Length: 342
Image (tube, rainbow, N blue to C red):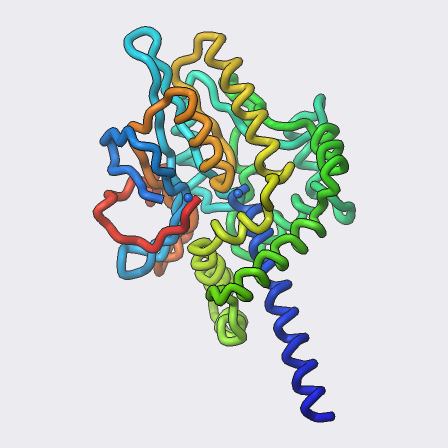
């Protein structure tokens, strides 16, 4: 009987670890939305290798920091030249990070942004709705994002970015279409978590190593004098395997929360180019960017440069409350940070 109890206890512990990893994978999807040779800044690389849009930089390489990329692509020459900038985002970050983005957005003729909302809802309407307690679906996602914001002592993108700028263009599903597509696919928050657990189990069955947050990690967090920083260090390192975790959430046929929304962004991009805009940014979660990049390359664009911005600064003494642009400058690609592929 004791043996059976030990077996059952081991199975329960394993199930808890899988659930925790699945929740963390989903949390990461919520932070980055949803890969890996990076370009050297300012140098053209015409091949079709996918770019990295998110990376964790270890202390030995000048970190610890979590960084997102802005990758630029051009098509055409002279007056016909169009440049598209894929601005990978994390949805909660340092205040300095969002101030740097605001400065960047001023340079674009149009900034296409993601935001699933009712057709006629304003940004303020959405902010009020996401602050309400209870509810499910996207309201639950907004609540989770705000909980992470408070736990990690960061700022929430929806609060920090000025969405009222004249050059901002909504390029996402409306909430009615989003739910209709989810119903059609049989997709929900719960099914995404189950999909991630199944993917994890399949990896382990193939003998692949799956990184886990250990009991010692949790002890380190809860005994730390700076729990927010300790949480960010643990979560930030998880991004190094998050490509695979997000692949588990996406599944072989994609998902509404990622791939279906990308289709809308590309459609709006075509409309924006048709209106004569030449410098266009696409501001989406970093997890969306590999697919968006693939679509750009297939339509004749070429990569021309890449810049890295510090989203989470976990270095000793860093607060994220520095002047705009501080700590958010591009890093040379000669450094060797640990990278998450997106």
